Amino acid sequence: MTHVIVTSQNPAKISAVKAAFYDVFPNTDFTFTGVSVPSDVADQPMTEKETYSGACNRVRHAQGRYQGDYYVGIEAGLDGQHTFAWMIIAKDDARGEARSASLPLPPDALKALHQGEELGDVMDRMFSQQNVKQKGGAIGMLTGHRLTRSSVYHQALIMALIPFMHPHLYR
Image (cartoon, rainbow, N blue to C red; front, side, top):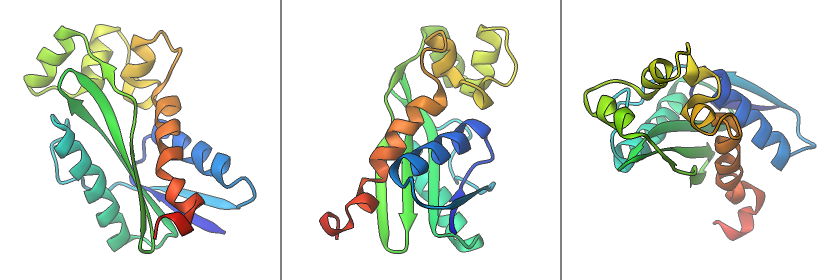
């Protein structure tokens, strides 16, 4: 049984990881464990660099604390006027990385983020919802659920798994 450590307990993130691993490795038996580890960055990363660091830090912390075959770090943040997420996947000495699609944010949301709020809280208020970030996320709300956080992360996770699909090409 192949054990995948997901550095989040958010159901949307864990669902995306499960779907991507089963799509890429359909004949493998997996167990998935969501864990809470620090990102060592702000709760709402405000730059691409900070977002990337958060995903890398989560993987590093999980590797030091948990026994697994794969470690998956997902960190969402900002890049200018857009939100996106970094996917970092590590197994032994191999590593895969990919960025999700970028979503343009409304000016009022950006203003609230620059005043210290987290995107999930801003979306909850803008759409009169509760706990948006563990459901479809800002992506779901702004696309009328045509896309969700899980669906967009799923694509990026598959891209981050490419080095594990073709290890001979990524030595």
